[in-house]
Amino acid sequence: MKIDSSVLTHALNLENCIKFSSNKISIDSRNIEPADLFIAINKGHEFVKSALEKGAVAAIIDNPDYIISGKTILVKDTTEALKTIGKYIKNSITLKKVIGITGSVGKTTTRSWLNEILNKKFKTFSSIKNYNTIYGLPISLSLLEKETEFGIFEMGSSNKGEISELSTYLRPDIAILTNIYESHIGKFGTQEALAQEKISVLDGLNLNGKLIFDGDPLFRNEIESKANERNIKAISVGFNDNCDFKILSSESRIKLKTPFGTIDYELSVQGKHFAYISACVIATIYTLDLDIFEFIPYFKNLLQINGRGSWKEYVFQNKTFRIIDDSYNASPSAVLASLDVFESLQNDKKIAILGQMKELGSYEEHYHKIIAEKLNNMKLYQTVFVGDRSLWPIMNNVKNILCFEKMSDFVIEKILEIVQNNTIVLLKGSRSIELNKFIDYIKCSTT
Image (cartoon, rainbow, N blue to C red; front, top):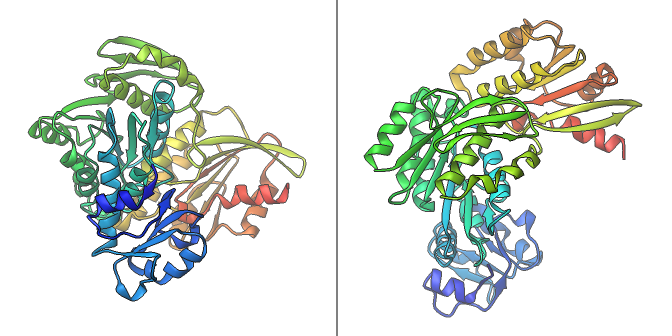
């Protein structure tokens, strides 16, 4: 939706707003494109002039020291202005449903797959990139079009109170809580505190809203209890017998028990976690009162997202090998799930490249020991660990392992010396470890 003087006049109650018309909002002057509306958040005021020179049509500021006549719009608080614009655009569109997704892992794949499936029959929109914060969510909302029927948005958290704030701001009709694992546990102190953060997605659900959640975890009782307090219908998905949507088989064809009978469908990607995400998508379609059988044929075409388990074949120095790129994030549960899939592959030349798991706080050694134990029980040609030296004594207990502090060209070249024809390489680690440099190096060397 175009953001122009009229939109800002009504959304922010402005008088004598400068005339402009913008394609989209940006809060990062480094990524300004022609016709952007730049909103200066905090230190962003220092880059107002730069943003305008790069092609921004106007800038919203809350510091009068940065006024540029005819180009800036002064407001009381730019963060609140950003939130207000996003909410105004959302409320000006007649959406059938708003769907909010949170959880420790799987948010982006769930959002992407749900959007892809619903888009076969409807006009849909989903969050762009990883815009799942109090800054990113309003920007995503501002991109809604008048024809949009379903809006699908991520909500992320690394600090207490963020999920409740985002959910209350978004006001979803349906919330999907993918799971409650150890991601960011170092910021919350305990698994219980982290769970309460995720469960607070219920705070913003609309009246008569519905929650789709992982029926397997330790915190099922807490989830259902809070849902009951708010008169929210909670629909469980998982592998347990008492789940509303129970996954009976997670092989090449998925068998799923549902409230309308048992169904089976084809999924092109392997792993229990992918089967689970597909079941969450089906539960959401059911919750939307849509005919799931109209959508089932499309599931076989769903693919992994880059950095989240995607497969690709590469040729380097006359050697052909495959890389499983799962390098975007790495909670302990996500690493174990990825290793389970890797273990199931029939190949005697498997190389696992694992990055340090971040934001685990006092649990760091504990969880790395669990991963080390898992690796020791696997048949791997080679294991590589990239992370702090303080963790090397733990990881060095793994047979046939090499440890490095960071992903440098030297390390990549060492690994490529080990790679053979038909090798399968797994990349799994936190984003900050930059395991994706391995793929970038190969691409640069072959172009």
